[in-house]
Amino acid sequence: MLCFLQSPRKHARNVLHAPVEARRVRGGRAQTRRVQQQQQTPPPYRERVEGAESFPLDFTAVEGNMDNFVVQIKNLAQSLYPCSAQKLDQDMKLHFLKNVSVTCNDGSPAGYYIKESKGSKRWLLFLEGGWYCFDSQTCESRYETMRRLMSSTKWPLTRTGTGPTCLSLSRAPHRFIPYCSSDVWSGATPKTDQSDYAFMGSLIIKEVVNELLTKGLENAKVLLLAGSSAGGTGVLLNVDQVAEQLETQGYTGVQVRGLADSGWFLDNKQYKFTDCLDTISCAPTEAIKRGIRYWGGLVPESCRQAHVGEEWNCFFGYKVYPTLKSPVFVAQWLFDEAQLTVDNIHLTGQPIHEGQWRYIQKLGQELRLTLRDVTAMFAPACLSHELITRADWTDIRVKGISLPRALHCWDRSLHHNLHINSSHSHVTPPVRGCLLQLIDSCPWPHCNPSCPTIRDQLTGQEMSVIQFLKHMGFDVQKMAQQQGMEPKKLLGMLNNGN
Image (cartoon, rainbow, N blue to C red):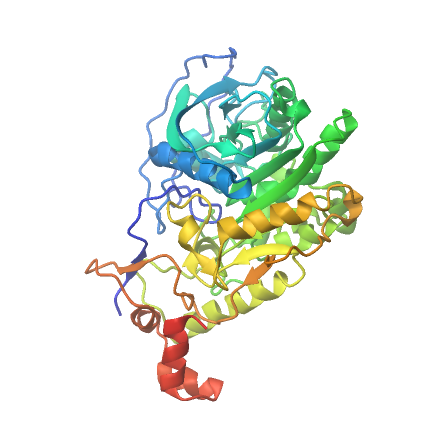
């Protein structure tokens, strides 16, 4: 059976549940660094030798494709708030936080990128993804192999991209917060002489919002907190906190919303159990249990009260979502590569056996069930990870509707709902011609014909849906018999995506 590799198009991937460290990289404990922070220029740090990256999934984070990534963020904004598109050079400037006590893992200053725009009423704040570490060993390994996700010492001072920037009647202020806390944006623990690393993801978001209130956010009507992968989970963990922060400070006119992309994970049973030795092999539940203690992680208060003593539950979308007050749109592949990776289904270099095929099918069914009560969603039956950071994200459709169209419909529905009490904000009135619950009903990976292109890893040739499913171990005759239909009819359904 041949191996396969997804998508010929280059795109940024910030993988939450993909490995971000080489397996079992050995090294001494991190040296304690005394950091003298400066507002715009980070101080020099003693660098360690970068370790080799060795991951079963492609992990290119954002740094190699940042310009393209910035374009996708602006395209996202354009989809939500369409108007006449303009092509403008966008220089996003790095700002280090004025509160120097809120830092990245290694004590270097945290910060954000901003393209300022006066008078904007709708703001987009994006959280980067990039998995996590959950104890001293995995964090040391991460620091050796993924330094940029734990330190700001090598962040560029500007980011540049080109794309449509017009939102409503004014230009969109795009804000991008690089991920350097390794805690799924949940931590509130500073670095000390007794600890090698700080975990301050939740506090970084809070401080960024405070600073943006001096740059025009105070006059906004909508703040969309968006994120992919770990950033998507970070949205679920922080959207209510941001809403409460603004309300407490008297900015009640700003409606906070969330867009969680590829951050809706299951605390399910692994295909094959493995000991929790690293972030690749550790089951999500065990990793989060260890991590939340190590990070001093915070979760939404309403979710904490629902899971007293077991707050780790709040890192899983289907458990935290029902407790949220802020409106949230969920974008999630039904067959998420990152979920499969931590479930020990490795799809690069390994043949797919019947038991693995059944597990993958069941995963899609379970994920579909957890989305049942989500008010606004976009869930294609594809094998992939991350939607809105892809170059081709506007091409994917569910029930004939693209994600940009779905997001615009969601925005319109919330516009009619602005004055309804926030405790009922999940309930949105229907808008003519708009569907808010978009989820594929076909049961196999890539049964949706608009899924990202699959290429055979050995030959480089594109595969049809049928070829792909056969590579996955799909038996047309057997599946048709199980479904009580003729094989020819099943093939027609697969080719049409029905």
